Image (cartoon, rainbow, N blue to C red):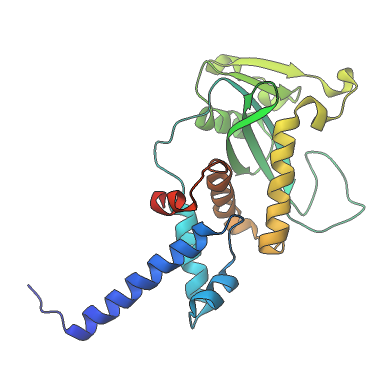
Length: 228
């Protein structure tokens, strides 16, 4: 067995201690933290180190084999990121990333767990794949009348579609939960991360927000620390 010097052990201990403090600082803040803030709080010499650790921890917030959503589930898409005005509206909007969101419905108007994913387009392949990953077969999935959701019944879901044009109500009224979550997500990105979220790493931020939202009623922030 190779010998390890006391200096190497000391360096390893310091790195481990710093990492524990990093995780504690991240999970103890209700609205999360950005890399620059954690670098300052922990006195790290490199912003890049803080940023790299933060991305790895965001990935660790997703538990492999986690339970899928069940019961009644609202599903819709929303655009995240980008700063533009006067552009086109709808599912083909430019300069923003398309995120599909699923929210468990608790009656009469409560929220359960959520799932999110960045998708390249609103095609049937993209949307059906997400629902199959996020929602337990046999659940009731509520969507608008977009054709991208037409294959859900073939995949074992009860599908309730609402044509927004015929209903006379806007999307945030027909599916209030998913649009409320989308609004909170955008506010979180603007506040905690000052909109500095690139397409390449957007999934990491979605993982962190999902982790925090699904534990929003936890009485102990330390519980989140032990989960990570």
